[in-house]
Image 1 (cartoon, rainbow, N blue to C red):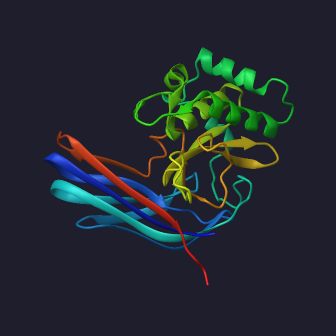
Image 2: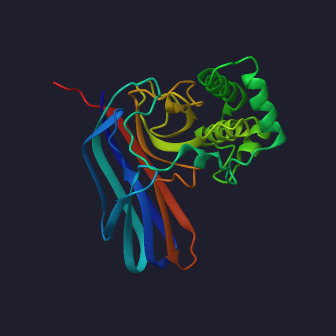
Image 3: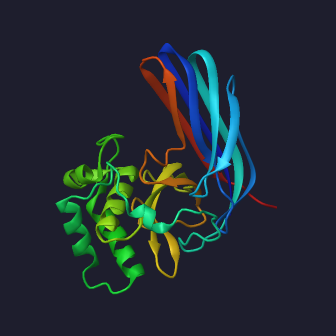
Length: 271
């Protein structure tokens, strides 16, 4: 499947800030699951700095704006050829070893409830793949998709206690549950193409990858009760939503920030 992406992120500040610097993870990596056909990242007035491939195999580049800044728009556009490999990440070049992802963050810190959820989910499952599918299925059934009820700071333990959330919360819960069982797990940010306009298939999306012996990293999307297929474009990964964020920035000054994000993913009709 060939997918086109249009992703615009606009920042506005109530009061100008000074010397804005961003770390951007906005370039999909080539692997067997996806191949970049064309891709560009632009920001009017911003200076693109040096880029590098980090240990997780993701492309990171910097953007800076010197002097006083009242706003910034980052525009991403491109096309990616994708393949359905049953959720298994293949050919992704990275140097970080899977055990590193046994570390939890504030968002994925285990709780008694998360441990009980994980233990009950995998009871009777004898294989690693079966345990992973059981975990993902349980999270789908336990955390009801409900936009607007949680925020960026909601932890996995809090989402479990509430019983609702969005794809970020469902992914955090799955990661935290996997960690309680000693399964390396990480957060993935990317894009998702949806033909039916499903509310749980927003174009800007998140899911988890669990490391399974004999298979490697395998993706699970509890929001849509499936493994990533040709509809998914992988941008980057991290310990949680903050660590895997496509854009992170700092600036001098204190001001209220207004953020507007527009993302569109469409299928390209090939001749």
